[in-house]
Amino acid sequence: MRKLLVTGGAGFIGANFVRHLLHSDPQISVVTLDRLTYAGTQTSLHGLPPQRHHFVHGDICDAELVSKLLHDHALDTIVHFAAESHVDRSIAAPGEFVRTNVVGTYTLLEAARTAWLAPARRGESARFHHVSTDEVYGSLAPDAPPFSEATAYDPRSPYSASKAASDHLASAYHHTYGLPLTISNCSNNYGPYQFPEKLIPLLIVNALHGRELPIYGDGGQIRDWLYVEDHCRGIERVLRDGRPGQTYNIGGGNQWRNLDLCRRLCRMIDETFAADARLRERFPAAAAAQGGRTCDTIRFVADRPGHDRRYAIDAAKIRRELDFGPAADFDSGIRKTLEWYLDNDWGWRPLLSADYRRWLAQNYTARVK
Image (cartoon, rainbow, N blue to C red):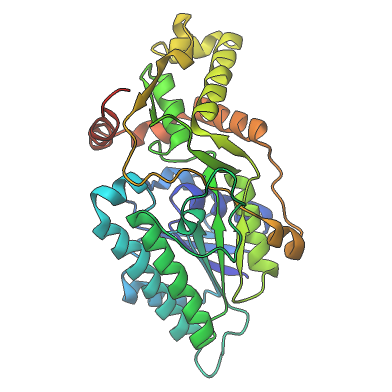
């Protein structure tokens, strides 16, 4: 693993991974390929060493471009993050999810098969790593055991169905063609550079602007939260030591109800504002800047269609085989995340376009419960 193509590397997890890898291994160089849709921005890659990082604005569905990059840069590893990933958007416009998540993955797999499985090479030290989600497994009952790598797929939304399809396609390329490939399924990520449509950054950004904090349904949905830096470390471990053809679940071991998470974050925001008068000047619309309580701005909104009730990851396999586990507990991870959003508003304010604000209004002004 010396020369990598990272797809979706200007997005949330991809950008954190590129940063992690370039900082952790001076022998590695990275080509980042990103279409720069609404959730990707080059500002998330600012400051990376130009001699070791090359950004390409392009589409993973462009077979000619992908093949050219593999050839011209002699790339030996693909880490595939690029995906449409928001369930609400997949419900409104499923076609784009099929195009990017299924057709895009197929395009990358074909390019890798052609480049790496020629008779002269037969894979050598190449590796294709496909990054997926726990949502492909469906929804867990409250007392059900967590998802393991042996759990049957049961996707419930166009997003999770498109990711399930891409997982199966990736696995088939290993078993049919011998493509050296691994897959990881992760739990919900949070941390720096996340687009503010996802729950944690949405709550933080809305709180800083004095807006209501929307919680779907009764707020009882349970998620297993994984700090993004731990996810990046896990993927690196799989790339270096994982067995080709295997899937590894990467979880945070932090199950929280959405409402409990929101209340914990609200208390942390209030405490942080109380300790730093400068924040009250920078974010004067925040309830915490006006002597109020952030949790008083929580509002319950109508649940989205097909909302999975609970996700949880059994990460025993990656612990057992690769000696990997998360370093951050939820309190330390969420505090670092809040600090990043407070200190780096240059990184998320440009994302709050008029189109995004319209989308937010359309999707979160449902009936207040």
